[in-house]
Length: 183
Image 1: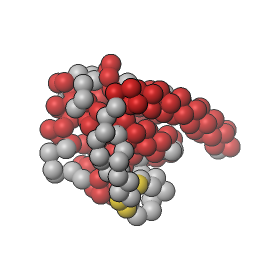
Image 2: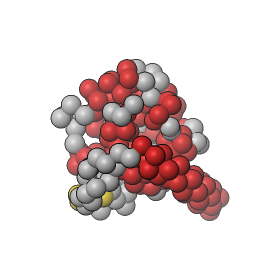
Image 3: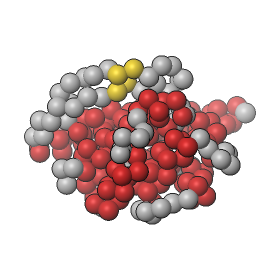
């Protein structure tokens, strides 16, 4: 148990360092493109607290993506393991994770088995944090994810209620879709 805790702490530390590096890169890119889009950002809690909107106005799509990545970096391995071990996950959690798998794996219709394999890889969080929207997402993938997750049937609040790990992933996907609009 203490080995698992130590490993979890080390993975979390490495992930945070990657977030800092990616944040710097995205800010440089954002300042070069001078996107002045006004957006809002939701404050995500991964500790089971109530999800509240923070409404920080004036963030560019890439700043919003950076904020979402920070929250993704806070996802604990035990929350991922809990989802991975579910034979029949809640519908909203499954939808969010299937869309995440679509983005990360490139498969248009991954099944729950594909999602469980994705979640079982030790670098899952690192892959989310390292994902480069400008080079890695196709229009087909973006359209598919928008149709499945962002057609009005699933909200951020639904994601908060579905799982501690799903709320940050939902916000990450939402920010990615916003960034993909500029490509």
